[in-house]
Image 1 (cartoon, rainbow, N blue to C red):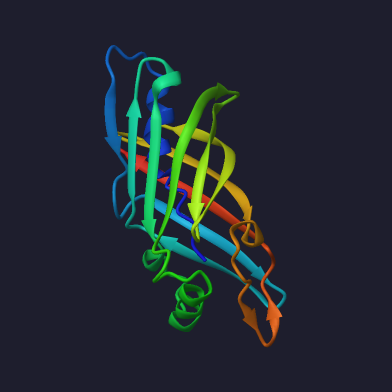
Image 2: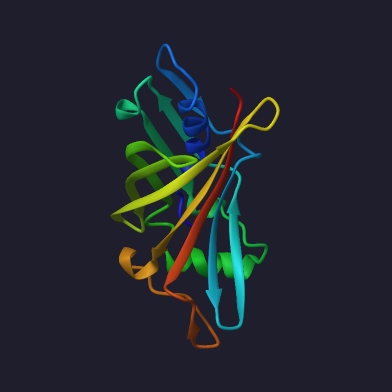
Length: 182
């Protein structure tokens, strides 16, 4: 059920984009500290799957026009703290056939207190546009970027998992909390 929104690297990109740059720079999200999560709702309960092991590459240029963000996560890296549910989710999204969820930005533009990001999300063998807002923060010695967006499982051709014959909601929320060292 996980979506990669490899949005992890966004944290670096957006935080750094607010500072003056002289040359293009490349950054990666800190593994183990950065998180990529999916949130789902079933009429009987809510649950979250979290990955702390994903790739996030941010290539930041002095102009946001040529900057790029790429995120990639193995579906199997998401943990909902319930191995039975995780196993069922892997079946539902056909993780053996489609092992990764990936995001590639197409635009990054200053907006309000952060940046508007638009790009393509690849999940379950389908590519769909996504857009979201990211907000940079500057804890001591790091850059933190947070954000999220919603997707519909049906848009990606995923049959909604069921519990007691009742399916989860079609909407899945993807969120990220990314850290990088400046």
